[in-house]
Amino acid sequence: MMVSGLLLVALLACLTITVLMSVWRQRTFWKKLPPGPPALPFIGNYLQLNTEQMYNSLMKISECYGPVFTVYLGRRPVVVLCGYEAVKEALLDHAEEFSGRGMQATFDWISKEHGVVFSNGERAKQLRRFSIATLRDFGMGKRGIQERIQEEAGFLIEALRSTCGASIDPTFFLSRTVSNVISSIVFGDRFDYEDKEFLSMLSMMLGSFQFTATPTGQLYEMFYYVMKHLPGPQQQAFKELKALEDFITKKVEQNQRTLDPNSPRNFIDSFLIHMQEEQKNPNTEFNVKNLVMTALNLFFAAKVHEEIDRVIGKNRQPKFEDHAKMPYTEAVIHEIQRFGDMIPMGLARRVTKDTKFRDFLLPKGIEVFPMLGSVLKDPQFFSSPRDFNPQHFLDEKRQFKKNDAFVPFSIGKRYCLGEGLARMELFLFFTIILQNFCFKSSQSPQDIDVSPKLVGFATIPPTYTMSFLPR
Image (cartoon, rainbow, N blue to C red; front, side, top):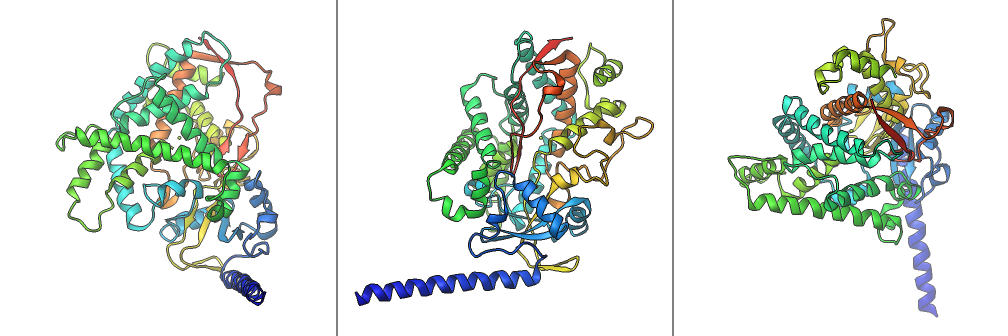
């Protein structure tokens, strides 16, 4: 009896000390960090945050605490930046200090800070430098990549023609097309649209990506250290991520067996060759884990008809250089990206050293959420931020105008390295589809609801159907 009593006292003492340490740690941080809602030990600001509407919850907090504030996601302190001025001041004016990569707990489970997107320090620098150079070698920004996109667009057009005007969900058609472009760079070849391995890979990518936008996905961001050991939807996301890693690993092993160091066929070959060249370098970051994770990272970008007919016509495929003569089409594509707001909270950053930011001191290692959605909807830059309006990107002469708050690919030292590829794909696929088809919805325009299905780390658009009618 005495032993059990002593154990209970010891347990209560440990719990009390843990709580006091947590409170002390938070107060120490609060002295340095921007203000924010009071946080509780262990659960942080969980009670003030709606995991079904995380972006909106954070924006609501900004109404009380301003454009720079601190929240605790469980035990995890995060500085949140809202609006163009705060995000620009951090990611551009203090680009080096905010160049670290913060956590995305779901993907960190598999990457463990490997790969070009989720790594930090020297690893991130080496992988990013190599990836940009290699993608450029394989055609990004050159005619090579344009030809890959145009070739894939031909397969897409044929697939859409085969629907014979039936009402379909085009999402899977488009995802297969875009994924095949990056497949041709990473693997050296495209997949047939009905290839079972390819379809399985796309399904797993979609499943794991959608999980990050769900309430459970947002809850996992707060309590990953416990939830990773518990049953739940997160285990299915882990299963899909592991299967994707195995898929890429299998491709790497195939390339290793047939590698010719004098003739790289694709991105994987180039990485393997660099691995051989760096074998004697003790500080190299070129290893199989980083190769697999980087390859996986690369997979995770009415009046228009008149302009297409006038500039391009119907007898040739669009070219990327056509975009300079098509201001309205460019404005529509930019507005689609702005309105779609795919990564509203941005990929988390991490401060690389103690940094004075405005009137605050951000300690080295603190995470930062640059709320890209708040920049894309900043009323100082967009007259009707909640509406779809291509006029946001047209001047009084109906010419295309740039907008500093257009940041779908982020800004600063960790902007999306696939931006150039994505911009070319968006223009070419969009114009080629509209060159060949008119769209028809089964719903009347006033009945169409474009509200997102989920908004978390990512924005997941609603499912929909439409008909592609040949022009």
